Amino acid sequence: MKVLYFAWLRSKIGVASEDVTPPPEVTDVGGLVEWLKGRSPGHAEALANAAVVKAAINREHVPFDHPVGPGDEVALFPPVTGG
Amino acid sequence: MTIRVQCEDFDVGAELEALTRGRTSIGGVTSFVGYVRDMAGGAPVSAMTLEHYPGMTERQLEAIAGEARRRWPLDAVLVIHRYGRLEPGDRIVLVATASAHREAAFESCHFLIDWLKTRAPFWKLEATPEGERWVEAKASDDAAAQRWRE
Image (cartoon, rainbow over all chains, first blue to last red; front, side, top):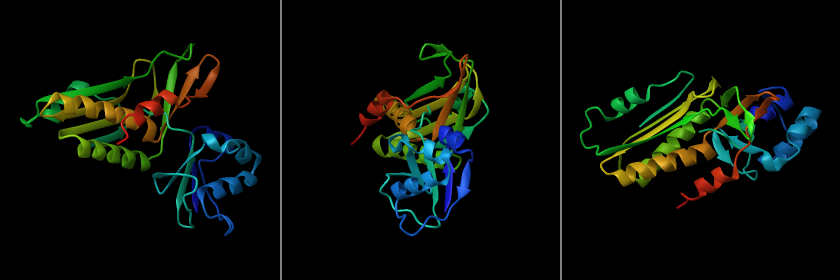
């Protein structure tokens, strides 16, 4: 599974994307975010407040209870500020 | 329906001319142009860098423009959004809608910019005298988008 980070999540985590293989008990976005927190102190800090983290799967906005699978492109980012 | 995500500036007059040329069913065009401001939250801003999610940005803008066409009888829709480093006074975004009548053009243009602000994956990094800071999403932008919920 490919995970992409944007804006301050990217700067805190230190990479723009990474390939990860979460354990089978990770079945949704919320579970993935919890699991990613254990990868480094930067991950833990960036993902500490899940209320300000939004997600997309395969380039569509999704809520945290949306399922994730091995072939997905998952993006995590702060609320968008375009326009 | 034209969607463009680009670094380069755009010429508003030329874009509106291209949008309407030869389409004589159009009775009116509404356009919105967003600019980089020189102040934010009481601090001077010397530059703004826009980051986006290539691939998702275009997909979301197309979906939003498609939704506008579903809701209003539009002859043409144009969205141009820039990314990269911009300075105060620079254009960021152009939204233009064309219709036979003004209500559809006005309403759909307002809808597009409100929805774009809460759905298109862009993030703004401001440069201020105290350093760089990521712009936070505004509750007022969410409220503006909520207004258009069906």
